[in-house]
Image (cartoon, rainbow, N blue to C red):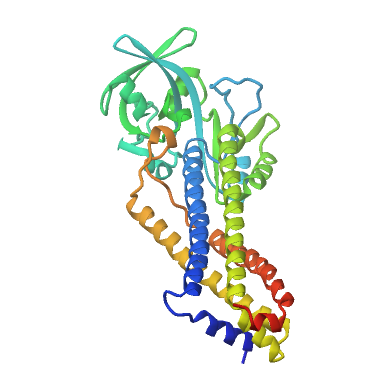
Length: 406
């Protein structure tokens, strides 16, 4: 029999309403609340980061292959990746999908008002499934196999409200060229991402429109968007892909192209880490205080144990087990609270957000069991180690004075 564990279990079985029972509940509540906040923070942070990243990747891919140029223009010079190089890129283990694209800036005139436009041309290689979550009405234009370019486009909800147009309406775009050219488009879909970079002026249509305007060949594109299977290996995939393109071409990662957004997301992570540090400090402080109180309350018992020959090591173990039991109970309750909150918000979306401020309509939840397990282990280890401090007081207790302690 484990004697310290047995005694600590009997000590912990205090009567309801007693001082020890109240102190134990405070300790459990402190740990539970701290763990619930830490797990909940990571759920929300992970959901927020993944939501923003998914929106960026759906518009730009994880990696873009384009012609090397020092120009910062929205419009790309044409490139062609030959079949052999493209086959080599598609054979990369991390590569899931490659799609072609091109951009063309222009203007739209509606009822005497002029609006900016960035026309993004795509083809049948465009992954529509990755874009379905952002479509509010209609659909991404369908492209036939005929040589004639489709005149359908999908625009953002923000653009449609500013221009006061909707599904099926016709808009006319002016492209600044020599000589200037115009194209008439039919709105086939309306989307919303909440990100200003895309919703402000991006319209998605047929890449053959840009090929016709720029007098490109049928195999020329502005670039290729590459989607990979593991975002954590983005740098590795980029290094492998850049070795397979020609010397005139280069690659650009999405986290480098939208550096400000990704730096902002990383800054949010740092804030959460600081919050976790504060919560762990408070939890450790509370547990040490609770154990000090329990030791002071059990001073007479400690004196009796010492009088019967119990060593300091055994008595320390008794209170260490008692403290760990409280921590484990707190961990269990904290996990139940966090997972319960996460499940309710994930399925029912009870907590809304302002899309104009937070880029999404509700608080997102990300399930990462590795992080959840890590928080539990970290809390158990740190608080468990800190519990050693108050047990040092036991070695200084004189048995004669302790027995007479009131």
